[in-house]
Amino acid sequence: MNIEEAKRIPLEDYLRRMGFSPVKEQGDSLWYRSPFRQERTPSFKVSLSRNL
Image (cartoon, rainbow, N blue to C red; front, side):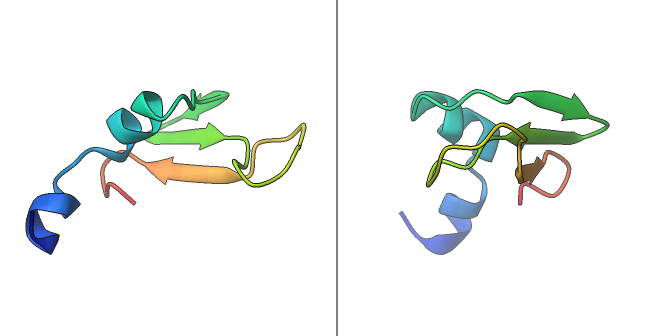
C-alpha cells in the first residue's frame, strides 16, 4: 500500500474497526473522545468531506 491508497481509506471506517464510535455528529463532522486519555467532552474531530 502506498500513501495515496492509504489516504483513500475512510477514517470513520478505520476508527470503527479499531473500536471507536463517534459521540456526536455535527454537519459533516464526527466527534470522538480522545483515545489517549479519559474525557467527558469529545475533542477529536473527523471531517467526513475532507477525510481528515
